[in-house]
Length: 571
Image (tube, rainbow, N blue to C red; front, side):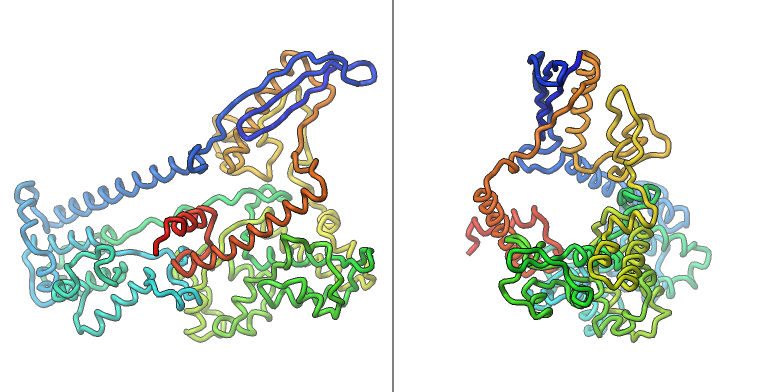
């Protein structure tokens, strides 16, 4: 039977209808219809993906388990080294010893074996915070300097300075002898303006070892140190695959190649509207705009008109109620500042700039960044400012190799072709991609009798593929958005069931967005509402940063929480 399949795709439902067709492929009769209801994979109250709640709980369980495991293994190692008793009752009695008094005593005289074991085990229980340089807690920003609330980085710095001014040798000595003024020896929230970093505990361990090692030369101090202070590196997150080079991972939006490819594409897509006609920009105008975007984080269309000496009535095709600016090269602006690379940045090749930014984003230790900066003629102050810089880790749809090749080709074409029309055409990203011989990841599609798993088709949009797959989802990965993942799978179930019942459809019609039916007046109202929401979000982002400077990139959840806090009227 020849039939037309109509589908209405929603977030948690699929409506379908089967129409038989006549010889001219016109609808003849409604054969069947129905709907399939399913969960969208999100919490109905918070709208957060259910996987987020499971992942958060799983992460907490792992932290608790690993903490207990580390302490248990440290305790057994100290027993093996003869520094803690083997009998449980005798070990329990050691809790009566004050570890802080023993930590001070260990700096000046020999401790008994079990006293030394009590000190070392106490250091493993309270071993301090080891900062991940990518969390943004240590970056020095304008918001940090204006905020009255102390950040975690401020509290860490306060503690280090307080220990130096007090003249005490270690953190343990400082805490015990100042316990009354500090309100105790614990770093409880809101009790003191201090926060301990792991380095302070490592320094104390080294001083204790320096004094006690001559008395205990047979103790394996290196193994004890590693067991107490070792921390697993963060798991490397998958970025998804490039749409044109599926074997490569997507690169970061902050990478210079990604910033440049966006700027170049915006400029070569840009036209201006004068006297009701759309006109292309001259090559020299395009170059001026590219230089302007490369020098600023954000450039308004008003600034572009001023730069090109255009009349105020002239508008641009990319200008709208919701978009009154073009995004500039924020990465270059930050790294080109005098307190970082300065003029050195402009002398580096695109590939070398990408290497630097990739290290800044992926490095987990400051030492990794400092080592990378050794080959550049920079002052120690500049190196410190660069190390403290935290860049966003969001990704584009392309890999680094693809982005660099496209940028280099666009820049090459812009120099070769002087004519505005030909230059703009040759610099369009789709023409450059074609010229370089790249093929879109999903262009080679096999014909199938039934719908296959969507990951096989959308090879450049899925994540999480495994080397030893048990099913198609593990073999090809899945889209990270749970609602889309579920909807596509349910569509496959419905369509394949109908194919089994009626055979393959002659036509398939899918409902498109209802917004397309809106009038011009209705669309203008939508644009104005979106623009108002964007302005409101910018205001909320600034308020959130002023209230909590550790949040560098506020998200939707942060804005919702802040709105709720304002509605509660904290004043």
